Length: 315
Length: 262
Ligand SMILES: Nc1ncnc2c1ncn2[C@@H]1O[C@H](COP(=O)(O)OP(=O)(O)OP(=O)(O)O)[C@@H](O)[C@H]1O
Ligand SMILES: [Mg+2]
Image 1 (cartoon, each protein chain N blue to C red):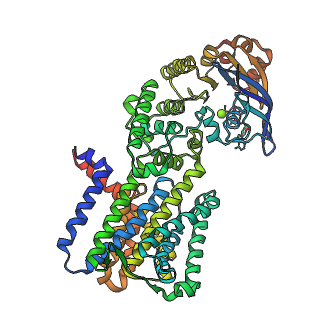
Image 2: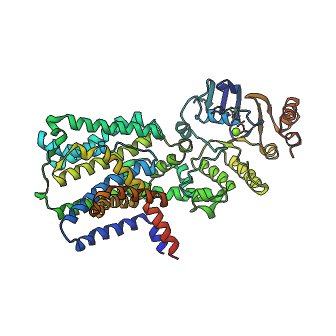
Image 3: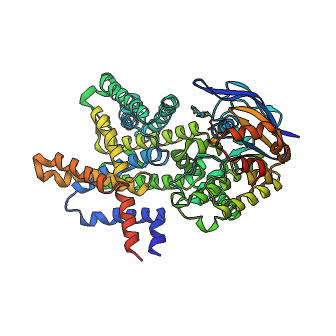
């Protein structure tokens, strides 16, 4: 019974929802609401990137570019074009999807390292535009972001953002699980293992790679919008190269192909620096060391490895 | 009626003419076998027919339509399916999911519906699952349905590929050495399986080194040597062809197998 439950992705999400609901009871200060929000937003982007990397097996070192598109859509849209912040979120998603479609068509023909470098270039390009387009974006110093207003309620305090971002993450996770368990999900996993066998079975490999790329870009854009809105401030650096690397690390660390893994990976990578903050100088060394150790001893990532251990332990 | 026609097809790799000016036709409902020594160009021929390689010359016609150079996924829509000599398995999926991938063309493919898990998608999944189960049963793998494909034996994977290839309901099925590496019993099972597939109206093109199997079940046999046609005809005709006997004498392949069909 325990095994069957553990195999069930929906059950895992239910457990995560419960943890999210109960966690605030143990928060010593409102700072933790803020940390939770940061985790949920990062997890949302990681869940999306997992569709591309974990399912379709295609790497992207430039997803912060889509994150940046979402973030600046809710910053620039309301500030310059007087668009309502909630509408700017959707404009950001549409823009990210369109850019992913246009960029993805040529670069998804590349494989492995070549794809990695091409996506890297894309991320840098977006980051350059955001930095240099000073009149709209405020340049490297960043810009303030108007508050999100939903049904007349201004989303401002930390607890409100905690619940809002948790809700969006859970919806995003359910959608990703839906995808995995659908014909599209099977097509993506198939082309990951053998493109030639996928094609012979009628799968349009180029189209499905593009589908995965666009979907993951939409997640990243939504996450970027939420980050900008919850912080009420955005800088180009927060959508830079390091962000792309963080997202990839979360997906790989959590366990490629696993929605729950991506959430755990994000929680791990977002909270570890906080836990290590007391170590001062050696904080970054420890962080790097822990990541290396996880990858060496849990090659499949945190969640798949732990789930397997638990399954073996349970009768 | 001709299902597949290959006309003057050729391809080369570097200086090697892997297939050279080859023509033949496969009639509907036949089991059409292609034999020849290692490196004769059998797999390369399959790769051109199934759109993985583009022939440098010549034409491939399926049901009267020129399909030369069409990509594999479009050929699949026209009813072509195949297995691979060097297995191409989705190793991170279960045996059942492997076959469900084969159902791809039967499934409705609206990504939006899939993201939202609409009731129609649930029904679709159930249909594909039933279909895949039936096919696994047909190839004798029903007990392995929920196992990861990576954990199956070589012989089982060979049959898994056949089940997956059948899932698209093909008109023409290309089998590249389905009995290679299989023991005697497994070979017999594959023999019987191919015959029932043909009886169901699927045209089969078969590449196989097991001469006993080939001689027994083929309606027509094409003998390739160095990318060229050496002979073509019934099992009887091919067996008695002096060129064939000579070619097999000259190669390391066993004459006895080619000749006497033992
Ligand atoms: N992608 C390729 N690149 C270069 N040479 C190739 C390629 N594919 C096939 N060849 C060459 O073409 C020739 C025919 O090879 P092919 O694999 O079609 O033979 P085969 O008849 O299937 O042999 P076997 O019985 O061993 O499977 C060989 O000389 C092979 O080395
Ligand atoms: Mg071969």
